[in-house]
Amino acid sequence: MPRSSKKHEPIPRHFQNITEAADFWDGHDLTDYWDLTREADFEVDIQRRVFLTVLEPELAKKLTACARQQGVSTETLINVWLTEKVAAAGQHK
Image (cartoon, rainbow, N blue to C red; front, side):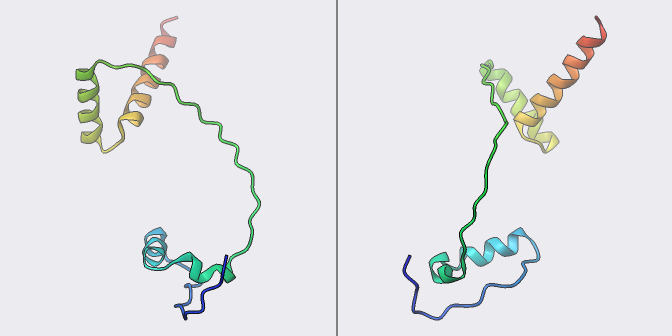
């Protein structure tokens, strides 16, 4: 990638948090700093599996409302509740 000839603000050595880093990069273009980058080599091993289940529309609305009240995602709420239900069912065997 070609190097930019325009002068640019130095990248802070450390950001205090992710928001500070995001604010910096929202206002700057990586191509202006290309000469400061280096190649990275890494592997990604994603193990998460997604299972889709059909819900009745009214049930989905109620679950979403409950999740919002608890400040969690609908997915998190469903996983917690199902984990509790499966654990309870296992105790009855």
